[in-house]
Image (cartoon, rainbow, N blue to C red; front, side, top):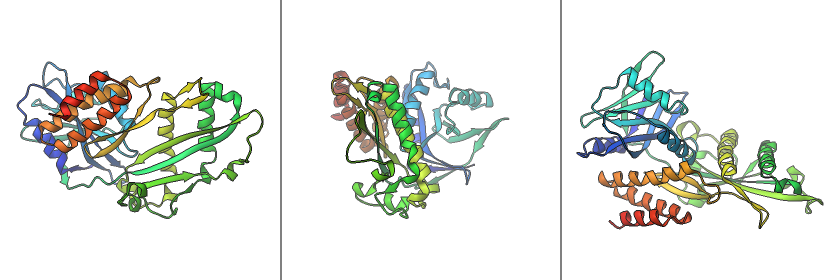
Length: 359
């Protein structure tokens, strides 16, 4: 396996390892996997504190797993949690790595477990038999701009559906895939993903995916007893190497999988407002973490405790970034976290973040 690490990330890990502080930390590595070339690229890192008695107690508990799961769902599509970093002088044995691996077994993307000291960064993977040390290459990797894809599910259905939340979700899910082969794009279908990612204007990096109304048999008038449903989907896609040069028409399956993820999370956090007889989806909130634009899902009435806990814990990341002199990333993240807590009207957390912003 080839392991490519962005130089700035190595600097961050070493800076944390060199801190003479009692606070115990671990980091999450973000990047992408290229199965065809057996290559892993690490583009970013998120740093957390842990409440442990010993720096050498290398564990990932259920709270960590819950928050990492939330992190997975706010990342741009194609970026993954690819590794975990522990700051410890304790040597990694096969038993230690196997224990860590079992604790994060639900994350198939995690392929490296890293031990970082003030002297060295050691990357390991694990086979069925033993832990294997990986050699790594440091490079000036570029974090390309995200490409945003947008699509609106539109369907005509029985008015009885809208009073049954489970039936409404079922109808939206069914309709999403029913006409997928008929999609068209707001840009030329032969346009490559990387050419869109390289556009300077954010508006030019948006692709709208459309299914013409005539393909669905829509008429100008809704039939008696029916209603018209519309549900917006939006995902950011990171143009990793294996899909950069592909045209839009070649990426139909990729777009479908990205939207499916957005649809699942949105339907989980939507609620039906009886007063206005409408399904209310969560609000997307931008959270920029060390150069990566993520999208959280805010819903006051159907909130995710795990996502909220993740956002609170990201305050630690902002503090750590400031301590290792990554001030810009720290301030951007704090501003986005403040906006998130404002939406939830959490005055205590707003005040806490404000104090950090103005330090």
